[in-house]
Length: 400
Image (tube, rainbow, N blue to C red; front, side, top):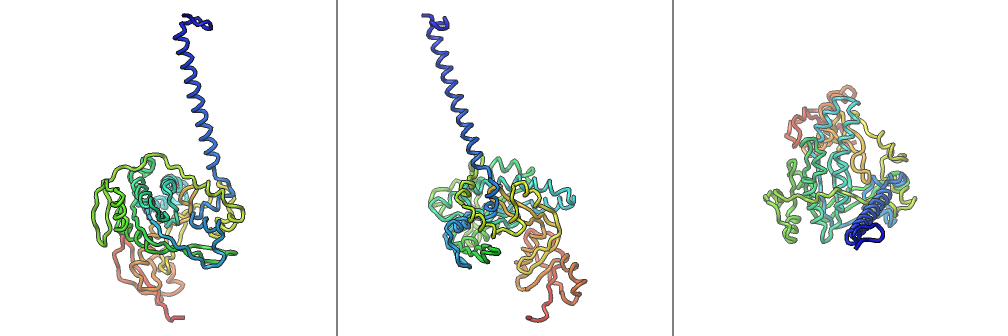
């Protein structure tokens, strides 16, 4: 029977109408999805007024919102899962760009931001609170809940296997070593609210994660005994284990983690902050960052410069990358270079001496202070430092 509208057989005509109807529904659904994605992307676009909050971790923003620390010092105690992710390869990469002089700064900043921004996005997307950046390392916190350990563990696997991160690792130049621990984490907020505020953290959970990370070679995941016991309890045993000293366990031969693009939504939390909360958060920033008013200004913050790195009176000097590292939703001003690593190693290896210097600092200081103020220390092997050069101590003449 022919269709009165088009003259074709009715059966064929109805089929065409259904196809058209289906196509129009599909098209409408796709259009709606695109509009939702567009609206969501607008919602997650950083407004300039929220810029100071990107330099402060969630644990501090929460205290600001609660108006908790009216008296300083203020202490926060929690049980937590702690992950330390240390990127291997950036130090030597920074040295090579330093040799190019100022022309290398844009290239280095682009490489750093490409890799570190993706890594930070994955940590945020896994629910981690990035407490701080120590050069090219991340200290990440999950308040201990039923699923905090599995979140941290799956995040660690993703950092080692995720395609979007592997694509940016410069042909295998960059690798991550990861330590995970758990236990109490104590945060102190110090300073004066009208001038400058800072927070410091310590506790068993951080010590465990640090000890685990210290055992790592590049590409390793090492967890404390308490983390491993919890992984066994929840049945997460699709991996090979190697027992290490003090009960620590190296995880290997694990399957790939999530392959979905990380999509952190921390900006949604920023919208809970009123103007006075944002103003208070600025006191946790170093002075040079407090005056930033637009995202575009961030590009002028990074530089290659000569620095003396002080690590509780252990000093090393040299050219370093100084600038912003991280993700637009969580970033920090930090310093990266082999002098940073050397200062940290000197602090550990010569802790019996009050003031210790590398050879560069010694040569820069002796003309003013005189050779009699220094004495050379015996050489000691330092992890990750091939050639530390001569190490000197400053001779303190009196307790005054």
